Image (cartoon, rainbow, N blue to C red; front, side, top):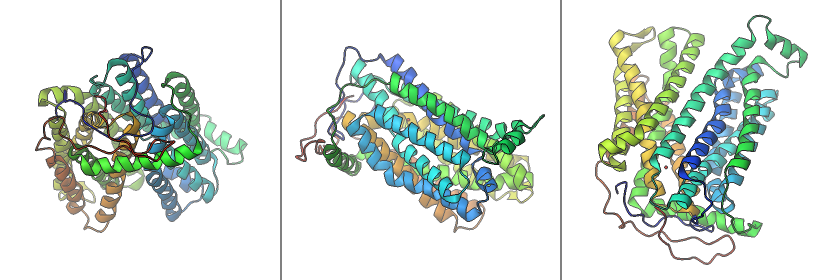
Length: 479
């Protein structure tokens, strides 16, 4: 399917396709607001990344307890991923996105001020719930708004690319602020120590990034509630939601099994999850080997994480010109995923030259840097084109659910890759596992899909107020 393909049938749900509206926001305004929402949502979460483990350790948690808190986040996000996507399709984008911000706000407060394991674990679980709620509604709002204003054939890729770039930039800035703020508070008059003493140890210097993130979350909530208008929806009832959400989720899962292009998109997301987990799990060890000490290795890894987000931002900005040069979205996805696979294989190839004191020479180090950058640039470049194809396959009533299915595929395969890699011999085999999965995901795009309009029909689930199924209908013409 090419960029100008006629839309096919897709996931549908109780809300119906996005209606055209004379007073809908124009596409440029919708794009700007979507970019702001992406940046405001991810900035506070980025601030909490760098000091997270150090703060939990400072509160007296051992390694097992820290791992348990992280697991609480991951498991909550995975369990709620699909139901919250369906909730967004039934209740509306703005309400669910605001709920995600509210949960993140509470989670950051507990993360910053919690002193016991159960409070900190609860904070991580709430953060996972917020992550699940946020998976899809902002992007779905943007696509719905553009379709309502400019029609189903409106261009989406540039807006989706800008949103991805804003997310990456916010995470990069957040990681830098989160890593630097506790250190800055310890300089000169040591404001951090004074605050810690004044609060009886409740507020630590490592708590400052999360507390600053709370302020950003307040701004995010206000912006979502005032700047993201939605067309009126039928009044939701508890009975309707309980019926509509499972039906919408089921339709999203069915589409992944019946539509070849959607299935390819989901498998591409799964391969991307494998690649990201491989890099995130194995890079800290190589950073420690390069610097020779865990402390300096952690600082280097924070810098590398920031560089990865910036590379992802660059890749997202390259997505529109790449699609034009490649001749369509599918070829652009192939190029992006292929670059990411090449980067991982390059990291695996240079692992053999890596020794505890660092690489054996400048060439392996330079190749490893190139490989690391390729992974993030490639994934960033592929994402907007993948999501544009996805949005041409689903309609407004199932859009957030489809994005949640995509996110869940990424998380599950990423988790599986991490578990398998942990049982492989150290060195190249662990990197090559992720590289092989990524290469397989890229090769899925070598053969283009069938002609437009030939995709299979997905059945329409029940509406929120009725369990009677309706026939599938054409949809309007993505991270």
